[in-house]
Amino acid sequence: AGPAGRFEAGPPRRSRLTRVPQVAQNLAGDPIDGARVAGSAGLGAIYAGLCVPAVWHVAESLAPGVSLVKVVKKMLLTCGVLSTIGNWLTMFARRWLQVVRGVDVSGSLRACVSGVNRDIWPVIRNDLKLWPAFTLFCYAVVPYAYRPSLNALAASAWQTYVSTVSARTARGD
Image (cartoon, rainbow, N blue to C red; front, side, top):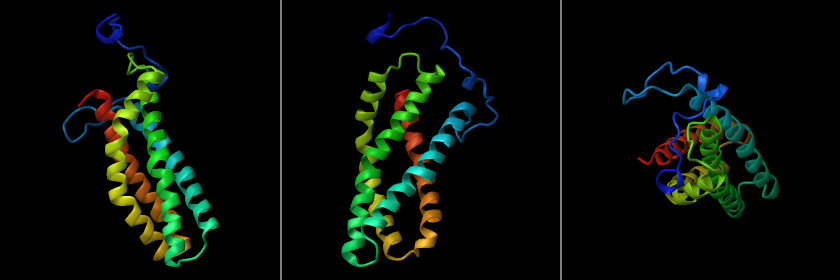
């Protein structure tokens, strides 16, 4: 075993997911990992398409209407759940996918949890700079029929940021 108990036994194991071709380059000119993109897209679709709307629906059903008190209650519930638990779970899932794919051979459940716990606070701070204002705007101004689409678009952009943070901190950048 190498430093910190890591094994240094050859290349990482490969799963079927790692055979997705690297067909493009990022802005830095590095190859884009197609399997990582596919996993992130799937996770983002589940989170932004199912989880986020479910939380928003619960908030709307608990405090229907657009009075100041109701809008603030909905914002507190929505941000309270998604800014903390939601971000933690998506960061964990992204890291765990790297372990499952064999990309992070030193990873373990404990290492994933520890890494997310270490890296979650900057994400939450940045989340709270954006989402309370966005959420207040949506609940107070955007008609109910348009909120899911606008929110899904914003949540997708946010998940791109979370994916970038997860990848960067998992690599140790």
